[in-house]
Image (cartoon, rainbow, N blue to C red; front, side, top):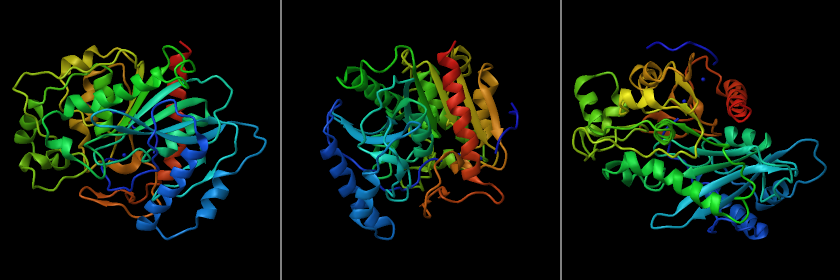
Length: 385
């Protein structure tokens, strides 16, 4: 099903350095310890991936403060404990001024460890990156939402991130990825710091590529794992998705087809009724059954990249649009698969290409200004109904 063409600018797995990390249970509020860990680990990451810069520069940026006429984005981290701990970057509204902080290839505009604004939160948005990505890959959307008054929890998926992709061939990929998001939601709703501040009924999710799969599954779409192999036996023009079907030693691009051990006809059902709206950007979606897409009742904003060489649009985003009639769907002209990801400050080579590169004539930064406004407007509309 052709999608309407609007707007200008997609991401999946780039081998990106880890964002700053602190080991803390949900609800930890020791800002000095958080900031210290962020700065030290950011410096260590940056030394490997970008030209060196001084700790003093980080401290200066983190210490920026002063009267603010609007909210800015704060950044903290937490780890949700468990057999597979989940690292989370928390972006939130703060009155403290923010500045550009270089964290590996990312340059988010944040105030590290800043106090949370006293203003009521507008809601909670959970963010799921693409295969092989990390929790800073969509920092531009996260900081915009935070400055607008949202708490944003960007997850690093255990077993499916830039350092560890073991889950892809585990046979539990389609169910485990969404469950990791639900675990983070459980932790935040149980957190002494955040639980009382998150407005009831105002929880959304945003995901790109495999993250798009993840948020649609949370919205109620059901995967039939056998559809992946069936699809790849029948088509020749979806090479990014189908690369893993050749075996575990084959190249593993950002959005390759995860291994499936479930028997034919087995459905993966991992809906989370607490999530009331989702944004799916260049989603990996061919595995969803048409009937389950038709049954999705939460609002969906869908964007597909016109020049997606990783997930062929007609099999993935087009599949969603064809069976989910209520989705607010559009194709972004000129965009490649990585265009929904924040613009890195350096080349990020991956098996699917350079995640920092853009198709000729496409301005990712300019497009993001539009996308950010669309995402903010979409979530805002759901809470005012």
